[in-house]
Image 1 (cartoon, rainbow, N blue to C red):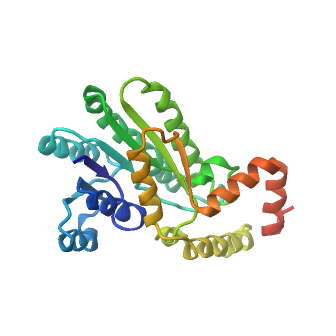
Image 2 (cartoon, helix red, strand yellow):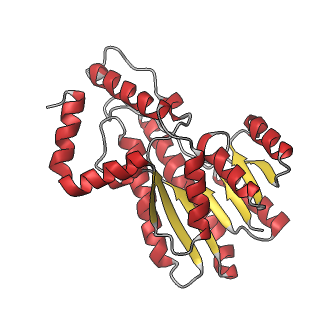
Amino acid sequence: MSVVLVTGCRSGIGYETALAFGRLGNRVYATMRDPSAGTRLAETADRESLSIVIDQLDVTDAASAKGAVDRVLAKEGRIDILVNNAGVLFSGTVEDMAEEQARAVYETNFWGPFRLIKLVLPRMRQAGSGVIVNISSYAARQPVAPSLTMYSTTKHALSGMSDALRWELAGTGVRVVAVEPGFFATEADRTVQERNPTSPYAPLMEKLDAAFKAAISGGADPAIVANAVVAAVEDPRTPTRVLVGDDAQAACEAFRQQGYEAWELVMGQRFGLA
């Protein structure tokens, strides 16, 4: 039995990941900013007799993160697996997006995983084992699309940190994997913001928002990502970066073969940009 800490378990990938590890007989600490939102997960765990504990953890709050990790260590004495899943997506152009909103994306998507990794690594290194999984995005392998500046650059940073950690932790017994999914049917489309109709970017944002919502609503089951996370943890031969989803595979292969100029051409044609 492994002790697993997962962030952002209210729904989507985090919810499915907590269940996937629980169904394998692990002790799972499924965390979220507001534990009262974990009713569905708690009911499923109770119905299936899974060892899942729902706890509070706001990854943007250093004290909250430390408190959650300390509680697990006090009860279990170890954390074998950390899954950094919590994330937000605020789309918008650089000119229109408020600075505090842009910073909030980084605080959740990058600094949250950063502080949790720093909290769990000392005990993992001492034990000579452990796996850290960072839920990134296939966006980390492509140029940044318009309106997704903050989201995509946080994922570039998260996958990049995973690359560096792979070398920093060589020989320690601790592994790091960045799982990079394509579009899956999660609640990410809830974060599409109200738009200013007088903005010079309003026509572009209307097209981009519609395309994004269509991609999410037509996405595959997030349980597929959860299964990829479990597989990455179980197989020590797993590479540092793992693409998940047919769309992610196809998009990254097309970019690899055709290059940046072709990507720009497709983007321009799709959204009517020069």
